[in-house]
Image (tube, rainbow, N blue to C red; front, side, top):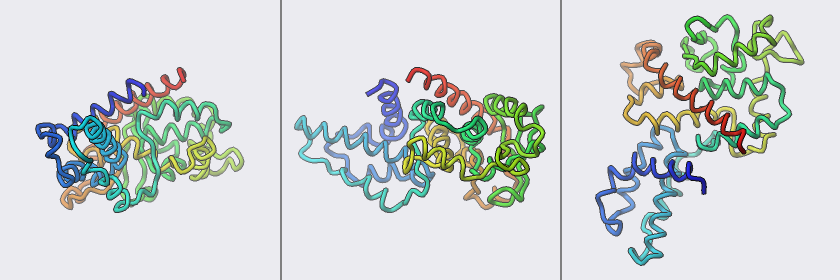
Length: 284
């Protein structure tokens, strides 16, 4: 197992398990305590983090059984309970798996526009249709902002996405190819139309990620990364990065752009992480 993977396992234990369970003798830990500890992760939609954390705890419990510290693992079935009770409609992968994903993307036969769409979707956390139908008139290069009109948003509310330097670089590259079209991701077969919203998804399948990742699941990778790294950040800000409707009804009375300045450093940090994963893919 790679050291970076081990480091990620340890960090999740430090963030979530140790504060709640770290002071307890392992023999005294009960399933309900583990369930209550991990439940907030599933409530926030970062299922992959929750499942990974439960798997790590089970590995620790099994080790304790094998060493005679405890007689049996009382927490063995907790993960199955969460998987059954909360269906994952959009398969996804862990953030640390992105270097391997980018290596597969680089090796795929998809054209540059499709590859750019996948990378841009990942960087901006936009929904597949929002990304594939993006127009040049929506981009403010000077302010590094993407203004999506209400009619193109799931919630039918205008939304602004801060663009990381990595996202801006993609757009600048594409300007030379599709700059004369209204659409950033112009269809090569039908130049007057945008690329189909399912093309990115089909490409990901062809890369060998069928039933492992979808184009919509790219958003979940970003969600897991931000939720784990910025644990002290108001969850409303992370939800705003994903253009999720707030559970706070008072918040919903305001335009989500009120979080714009708060979202910028998170989006830039995410962009830097994605860039590091792309560079890491060269060594695979």
